[in-house]
Length: 279
Image (cartoon, rainbow, N blue to C red; front, side, top):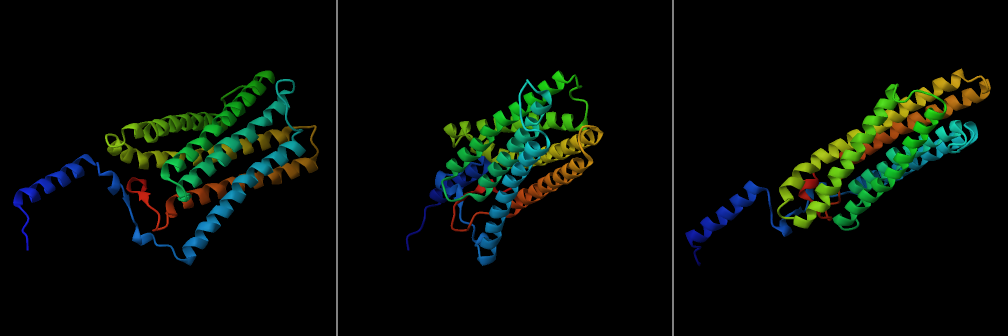
């Protein structure tokens, strides 16, 4: 049997030590098979249940909010009708912060049928189209309050919304530069990107729950205003109460199922996943 020279072993050990110390691995070693996550029938049923249920809830909460605004809040308008202009606010905020952001999070965690870079781009795309929704939603409520001579940024809902918007923008900028722009220097930025993954994921989930809390407090605030309105019948007030309560409960269920999907669901063992995607 041919013996291996000691200098060769020393050189190999030195290379492995440097790779461990710097956190950089060769490109073909950045993926790993995960035999512990081999899916059985129950795992696939759980996966399909999460996908179907989350889709129904994310679309359903937006449809329910549209129904409420269209049939009980007199629809939409812009500056010509400040009260109807306000109605754009709940629709656009729920569309941007909840529906689009929820789909973005779930696609990133559950979609492994395409290359990882494409999943990143889809994840960014959903967040990107949420930005104009959020911006228009903010402008609609700000202009409406100005026209109706109401004070801005006075309630818990408004301050939570301000913090949620700031965190959303920060997350988008950090994610764009950390996980897309830094890929131009993939090897040199690997350790930095791997360190950012759990931070970005945890803050993203916290931001999603903050958006849900902001939406629920907004519904409570709007319901209190509705009770004080004299031009709305008692029957319509009761119906609106049930509708806004249903929207709030749906938002809570969305937060629970998205959190469960992020923390529980993994890719099949046959799929190659980034080692640094482990949360």
